[in-house]
Amino acid sequence: MNQHVSPDELPPPKVKRLPREFYEDTLFRLQGELVAMQEWVKASGTRIVVVFEGRDAAGKGSTIKRVSEYLNPRTARIVALPTPTERQRTQWYFQRYVEQLPAAGEIVLFDRSWYNRAGVERVMGFCTPEEYRLFLRQAPIFERMLIEDGIILRKYWFSVSNHEQEKRFASRLNDPMRQWKLSPMDLESITRWEDYSRAKDEMMVHTDTSESPWFDVEADDKRKARINMIHHLLSTIPYEPVKRAPLTLPKRPQGHGYQRPPRDLSRFVPDYAGDLLQQTRGPKG
View 1 (tube, rainbow, N blue to C red):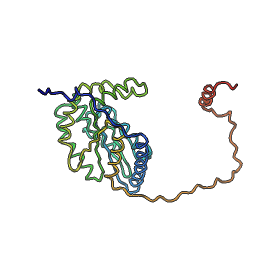
View 2: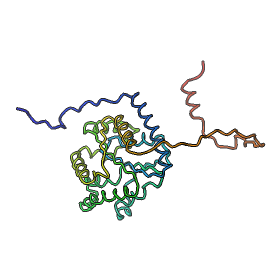
View 3: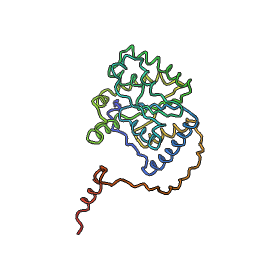
């Protein structure tokens, strides 16, 4: 007689990581294409919004970091809004996100977005059932308005298995450089895994539309997730190469008697690096 085994009781599947050298070469090539896309966005006055959502520890932040690494921060802006203020709680829910939308020639990367209401607010009880239902009705309308106004909108959901999420939480818990990434609410997502799953499924039913679809990014392997997401984004934006006027380095003109003030009039940062290097090498024999 076969006994039913819950998926959560099975040993975690072994994730086959993308080889580092292949990953780094491919990522660098795609980042070059992102720079080319950025130049087209500026030249054409295009407006792009990219929404990054998904499970806690699914790799959204690290992917955003790779997307924006070589982009001009004046063109590509990351938006990660804090908890709303008391005043913002009395506003139309989408209002504070509207303030962050791009102008002509700008790209906005939302590290979590208005979909907070369909996820953490819904699961943790931070919104009322009426507010939640209103959001599900208004979100597709809101996004249709953005698209009709000419904004290119892309929505990515980063999926991670429960085993991999717990592994990443444990890694952060013991890493003083990354402990800031953990909050009590993040850890509680472990005990509310199914609640978040149901909330995500219901959100998709209402907001995964033909004009504003969701794209799922499998993220147990962070390297694959970054490559796949960036490649997909580039493949859906109709950017073209932009010719830039050639630049030449001008010759430095002859001086006209300027003399720098004495060094002892300035306050210099101490040479910590040099002192540390000397201490590391030790006294010369």
